[in-house]
Image 1 (spheres, rainbow, N blue to C red):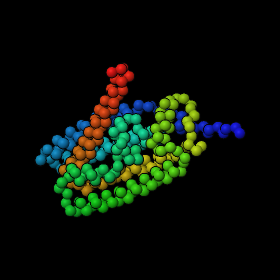
Image 2: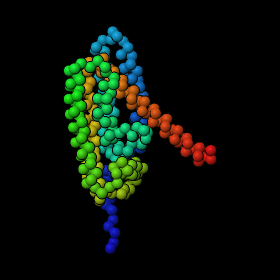
Image 3: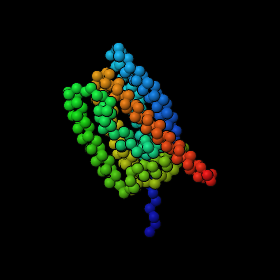
Image 4: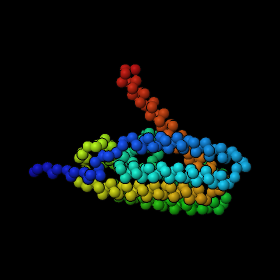
Length: 254
């Protein structure tokens, strides 16, 4: 019996990607993140700082995060598979990922560790938000599991790496990418929706936490978030560089 040929990939999969575009954006974004962190730290040290000045800084920092998610959304639409296994992050950074980003529950750990003067009312409202966020996160994980079960595929991370990299390196060439059960488009669409919903939950959770805090408390919370991200980034890049150096030394006979 003649083997059935694989369906051609939709034109949207014919790569028109700049394989370095998001990495370039991320490097610039992280540089600005360091600058904002410095501003946040200085603002906390100014005991006579005006509330309007603090609120302006908080708004600019939140807009900075919004810029990240807007660019990530564009990347998701171009290549959602790559977003699930992002080469612009180190292995250490990828180990922290939850549906292609940080867990929304991380916000509650950060606020608890960084803000020690929460009122009883704030604690109660934050705990309620935490419960609501956990429930929504559980629904998203169930949705992702259903997507995984709906197709006979390897684990999602491996699938994302394989297909994402094929798309990445198919620049300006009409290539036939291995399909999944003969229909890749519904899988792509479903994953895009999950990532969009997860990013929306992440941003809404962080913004709601900020809304429950005083300006000074918000500065502490946002400082803790930036410090964690930059610290993990630095450690991850250092480990990756050391690993590569060991590989190079071994190949050179050292």
